[in-house]
Amino acid sequence: MNTRITIDLQEQALLMGLKWQAAQEHKALREIVVEALQSYLSYKKENQALMKIAEASFEEWDNPKDAEYDRLP
Image 1 (cartoon, rainbow, N blue to C red):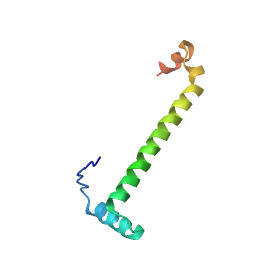
Image 2 (tube, rainbow, N blue to C red):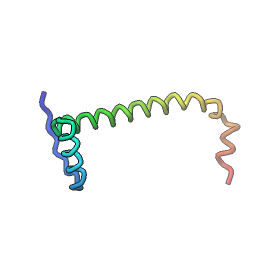
Image 3 (tube, helix red, strand yellow):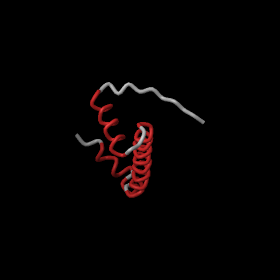
Image 4 (cartoon, rainbow, N blue to C red):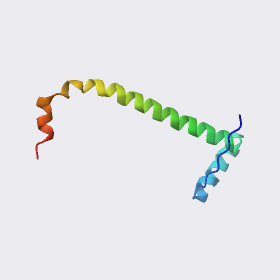
């Protein structure tokens, strides 16, 4: 399935950097953009998973007595 997207980068330097990187790696612009998006989305997914794990470590503080500290000026 082919999917197309049009993006206005709004910065000539980004486009030039993208073209330069593609040329350095002997890849199509599409490959560079797809790799960058995959990396970004993977990072976001990993970060969300870490945040979920971290929530468990703070559960002991989630009680009515500790909530009083939230109301202090």
